[in-house]
Length: 100
Image 1 (cartoon, rainbow, N blue to C red):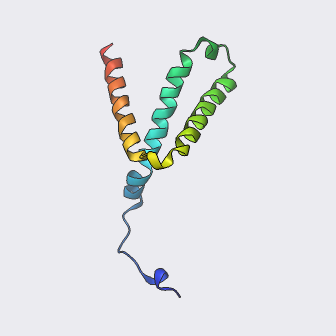
Image 2: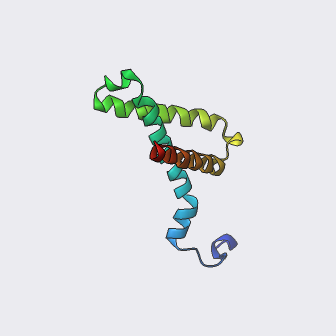
Image 3: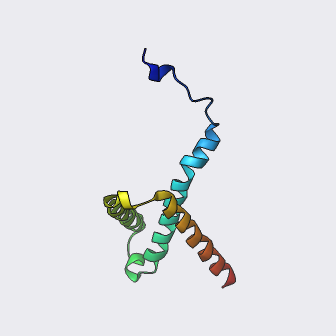
């Protein structure tokens, strides 16, 4: 048996904490990306003429293409910084909607 298998770094944090720290920032980033993409696409008059399944596909295609473009610059990209920036944009956007 190798030493790596017998070593432990102490008890693991509860699953809810690990998910909150590692998964949720990225999940929030994807959710914000979806809603901002929808907001942009729904303002295009061509979007409304598409059948619903094509509207969904259109949003998914834009998100996939955007993420692929971002992945090309992965070393330049800091996901946590992007997630924080998108959360700030979302808060600003929500505040603007409430004041309108």
